[in-house]
Length: 472
Image (cartoon, rainbow, N blue to C red; front, top):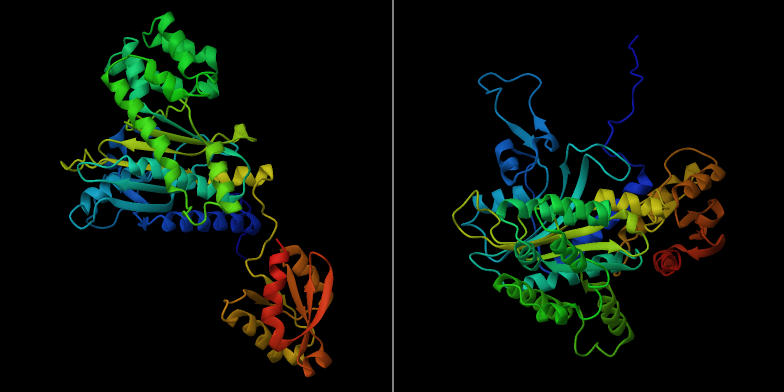
């Protein structure tokens, strides 16, 4: 007799969801994909495995990268070949663009939705394997700031459509922050640690951040000034006006000019036409964007490859979730792989972490365990062919599209079938006995409102279609 393995628990940090959560994840992913494509971004995929030297080229710690090897090397294979699972999607993108540079059309607008792996300590809301949903616009030699201005609207459209409540898209510019640090007396070596310290301000608090800045070699008076710039008071009202009055250096002025352009131009990218501007929906969208998008110099982004515009999005009512979407501009994406200068700007959404936390908080709903909208029950097994025909009629649909339907194929009493429908969350259930089928009729059950109506089979598709919008 074979021994049954008793340890069926998954490995810590590698997510595995029940169908209701997975359905919510997939729907969020589809919404993100649809929004990306509506702005003209093209899909790509890169291999899960890259050369370790490629992944480590941007300064990522070896401790956070999972190596990969065969359990037993094949004949003629080098067992010492260093391969690893990708840490993020940015470094593979840099390698991809460098490799296909002569086959791509620039500016190259790509989106990528794939899992990544990180050797982090597994904890609540943080995973070692998770899906990232990235977009980037890559230019050749140069890239217009218009792309930087378009991205906040893409972020806004995604989370507005997702219906997750009020959120804030914070925007800043690394040139402004770098100029302030250099003005405080820091050199190239010390600027990186100072950025990292400021990036942790919301996690570590003001006192810990002050201490770390002092350790970087900044004087107490200069630290006080820096803490003022990232304070809530400074980042309200006319931030651009105050920045313009400050005379720091040429880099500072350049950063302020770029920041002002992005903020002024972004609203132009809202999907509002001149004809629709007076409609309530367009006005609501414009006002909602104005309320969501603001300058915030406390947005730092600790990664050293950002060189200009930077973004960070947070939920107003759930600050503990942290950043739900971040990114920015970089001067040269693939500098380690090609001599061609490839500037770019992009954002990333860590979907697995985000969706799981939003579901737990009750912001994102995961109330159904079915992707079908209708369950067709089989009340009389001898009439099985008729029930198949009903399910197929829904699946074929009409000129307005099909309706996903599941047929209950097992032999079971109707009561058990209805319990199955309730547990999986079907909004609509079709029931019919022999007498009803002989009259070409069925009963349509609205499971949410506990209502039932007899409908002719030729009318079924149109009736169910009208019923479904009432059942969110």
